[in-house]
Length: 340
Image 1 (cartoon, rainbow, N blue to C red):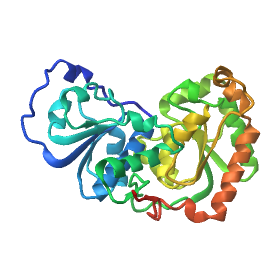
Image 2 (tube, rainbow, N blue to C red; image 1 turned 30 degrees about the vertical axis):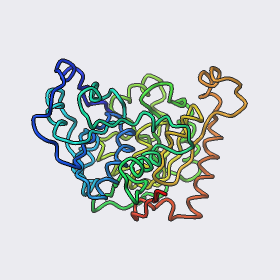
Image 3 (cartoon, one colour; image 1 turned 180 degrees about the vertical axis):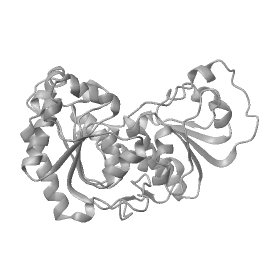
Image 4 (tube, rainbow, N blue to C red; image 1 turned 135 degrees about the vertical axis):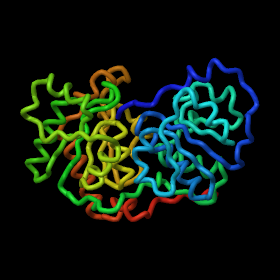
């Protein structure tokens, strides 16, 4: 999704550390969201659990702000301007951002309550990011009961998975090394159509020229693009399924309870970054590609349309056998973690 937040380095690096001009409110916690949609949705897990526990939470980020109507009870605001970041964040006892040095470059140098999640992200365990962040919220903040949920709820008037045969396909990603081949996405769309599904691509306006340049536009299913993250969320919420590359759009679909199938280039990346809010599955390169270098070079070609289609059928069978697994977010029955 659009990376529309600005780095804070220029505004903060030139200023000497100093005492706060006002005492931060006790228990007040600010979240500085990454411009990446997936990062935002996963970091909201911690913010949501703190808000559930009665803490004073403020979220700054453009994606979160666009989704304000989907985040009942959460105080959200646009991304901070570089010129105001330090003055605003000094009002909070704790400031959390996912990365050590972005979007705010030097928080750890001047804010005594700064928390980053680098070690949580790269911890060697099998949990997805949403579960890691829920466990961190319990452990670090002493919360007695946490949920693997970011608190998203659909505004009135939308119907969960209304279009049960619509498959939202997202064939793009933030970088080329995350993209399965575009021609195979087209092949997958054709396969789905032959089997009674309505395949539709969701693209950013800026991504459409990539498809035009391939000269295959005439062969594509409907292309959908949306004015903002909230409009995309509404469309995903009423879709039956999601299939895509490793991207924030898959995390958004999962946050809304829509079953997801995600194509990853590496098994370890899939382990950490698979969408973890609702029923889902991943497809990774086969084990027989012998080295990391060859996997990196040939992973796209090693994953066939047939493999992805088979994984989708397996996911379908699992969800339809236990429909409550797909609806856990829509019914607010989020997975709970109780610390020992």
